[in-house]
Length: 429
Image 1 (tube, one colour):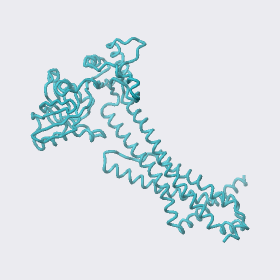
Image 2 (spheres, helix red, strand yellow; image 1 turned 135 degrees about the horizontal axis):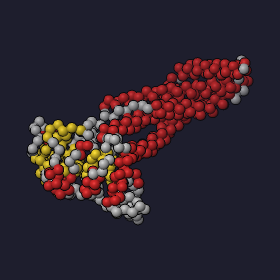
Image 3 (cartoon, helix red, strand yellow; image 1 turned 45 degrees about the horizontal axis):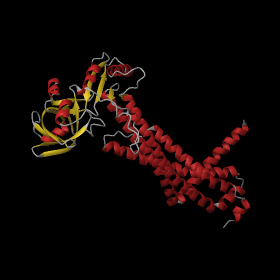
Image 4 (cartoon, rainbow, N blue to C red; image 1 turned 120 degrees about the horizontal axis):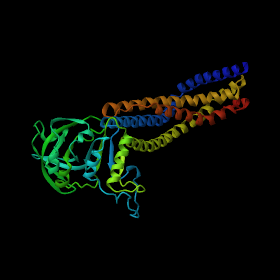
């Protein structure tokens, strides 16, 4: 037991002495030490800031999904996660032969006891709008059924949603967001006014009457859809040439029903309507909100891997700097090493001295990198809707990579210093 205590005490003494010597050396070589620290700080700041951005982005998407309904479902023609590139046109995409989503299928799903509402959606497309010479291009538009606000959270500032009768007749009416209303009409009341709408891809142009002004709930997507217009899907189809090719169904389950139960009911209903036999695969896809988050996590995992590789490259450069400065330090302090050995310092103590010095350099680089990354995250949170915050895993990864860099790249100089012979070291000029 006494031997173990002696070893522990000598180890702590070696570390404390190494820290004291390392601080003296860094103070004596400020510029050289600062450049080495900067190399490590760059790699650490990249890891931390990217981690903060991804964490903030995921948090924002999660909030948006929860606000629109965490159990909501979307019925689409194909599975987005299974999309593959078709090279040289050798293979047709497997979803090409799938039937379009039809309005009759929406009515069947809406009649299910487990479903509160189901809305037909022609999916998003772009239009240009003009009012009294004021023109706006790139306006995001959608063709919906009435009741679309169940899956698109927000409130009507003025006016109303279009009615079932207006949808059935394909009337030229439109609901616009508050920002779009301000851009087109300024301080004027937009209710009952006409907008000239053009789908440039289909070369179709019509006049639509504003029946409602809608304020979406603020989230990460609201900034991208400031200028947003909602048409009855029949009007978008007949008057603006928006085909049903990308049509989908937005499904809102009953609050008392689980997402899995609702998904099973929707799948069974659609399979029955499409006459699919038990062994036939689904010719449609049902996506839950949780699946969208999983897809995002998969994409960000690849992104983070690339970022970590880039950060590792930056740390490698910093590590090369550590090797260089430590080898120079060993050469400059050869006589000092000889004196320490002559008065009884062991090889392990010399080894620990230089390992501690290398680790202190990289630790200072890690702290500087954390400070830079934290500042960048704060700036993003202050000047954008993204709540960037440094996650613990990013801090742990950054510090772990910095410590590993110091230990690995400081090992060669430390080993070289520990192997010096005292007599040869004392004679060194």
